[in-house]
Length: 137
Image: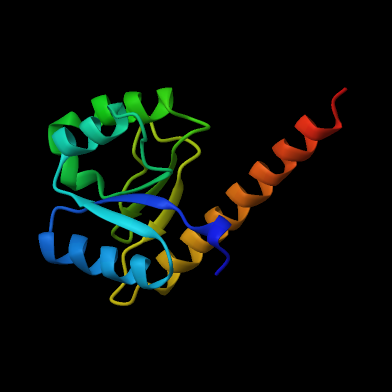
């Protein structure tokens, strides 16, 4: 994986073992992944100087603060991408329009594929932005 495709990823899940598993799997794929236990940690990360480029969000992990998290992520649109990591058949979450939805599975192939596609897209967008800047007089 090219160094330019490496993402900073924040992972939330209500199960701490799943959080750590997802971090390991995405780190093995070349990304920097950190586990966040809930809404407070996620909101703090989003408020920092270097918010994650991607949030893998289990809506259950943030509980009653889901609307607050959605609002903060919407304010970060363009800087922070979101993957909703949900169980099959879960209702769409209000406030997360445009987020990529990936169903939880015993293996993480679908999640890894989604993260890889987002990384490639972010690199393409960043490279296009550099070309636009270089072409201007």
